[in-house]
Amino acid sequence: MKQANELTFNEAGLIPAIVQDAQSKEVLTLAYMNQASYEKTLETGETWFFSRSRNELWHKGATSGHTQQVTSIRYDCDKDALLLLVTPSGPACHTGSYSCFSEEGVKDQSENHRFAILNELEQVIAKRQAEMDEGAYTTYLFEKGVDKILKKVGEEASEVIIAGKNRDQEELKWETADLLYHLLVLLREQQLPLDEVLKVLKRRHQGE
Image (cartoon, rainbow, N blue to C red; front, side, top):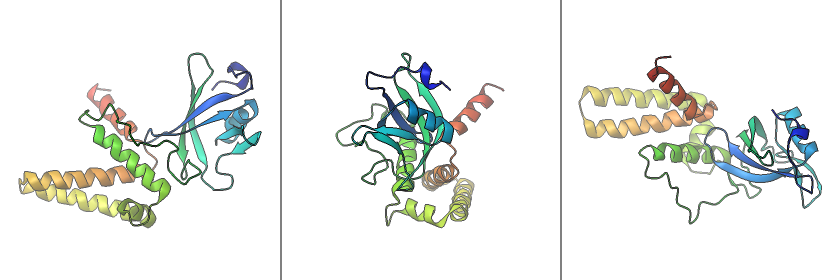
């Protein structure tokens, strides 16, 4: 982890900090840090920024409770920009949205990748957990907690087994989709990124 004196702050004493959800990889916000807020972030393990409008330090979530637990801090080649990977405890935006960035009019260039839907679904689940939209099924699962989520994973796994035993491909694909969705909800509840599961598969494939 770089110390503040190893970073390149601009003429105003600030450095831009991009905040990204460590699990879903969704970009949550862009803020600024000065030396003091950067050091507070290192000290507390939660994000602290410098408010240019109020000209003061601010602890993200101090009043709303929507803090961001820092899992890692990266910096670019010039050491004049930061990337913070965080575990958010609620919406990142003051509007109550999961992310400060809108998706309107923007097409993800990775959408043609055969597994792009898993990344998209992981982000939607993260958004539901942060915003807890009333009436959404994913919100219901998070409200009920881990026991309910585990029960659904078990139920869907059983349905997959039955569909496979019956050699019913139509049923199997739908039940497999349900199982994958509930597994992603469980991973989110456990704060375990899908990336970590994929790393295990890669290590096994490489014979480690």
